[in-house]
Image (cartoon, rainbow, N blue to C red; front, side, top):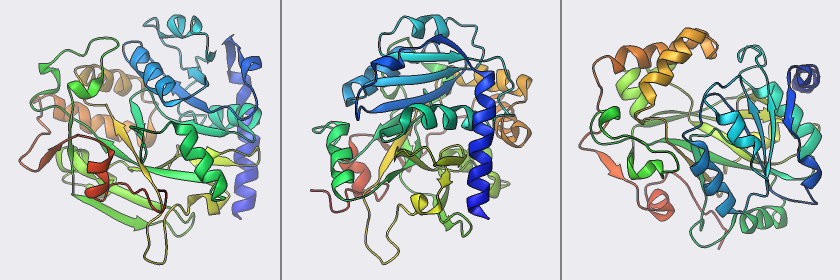
Length: 329
């Protein structure tokens, strides 16, 4: 059954490529086993300079990005970047499974045999030793260990006080404004169909979904994969096929290496974004997540509490049990 499902997702991706129009195609610059980032976005101009700088510093060689009809200048900005290949589409974001079909196609075409990192413009990958080792060191170790996928928990970061108390400036590190996170308050279950872990909790559960915690957003992601053209993401980067790629944890009591995606969602741009997405109604489950956000932002919520932790580095996250270096030394 899952083999047929994977075939169906790949066929969908092949069909959905027709919705993409190239703006600047520099994929001829991609060489050998270079490291690639794949992203979809809409109206994220203010975030893009820091996003690109962060991943360039990490060692990413090329960005393959899909613009979903932005009107804030982000598309024009990216078109000028020498290491970006850019496509645009006015198509409804919901129909290609919230962008998954578009990125599955681009990874099928350009990611085969390469390490691919799939992240949103507000997600910042943190992995063991990231302060002293480039991403290539991690992927080399994964290759040597015959590991083809690497998981990362989405960690919501937030400011102390109302979201709009501090203005986020273009090019700024968002964690200068939003350095706080929940060190606990997470639940983990196993998805028996796909074999992945399902993680929920953190500030979004306690603030926006306290009355319906089962509807809180999933925080489990598998963003880094040594791609093969036969692979396919099923639901965002929460899970993919073949099923074995989702088993990024040790079933026998040990620890596999894992990372974290620092999530810079809660800045002064948040209320405006929530309002826009409610009007578009193109997000998961009839945008119920953004409906909860809009209701809460009406009273200027403060996610900070006495149990909040201030981010220092990856070692802190490992001590707190949110990621692990496993047996990578």
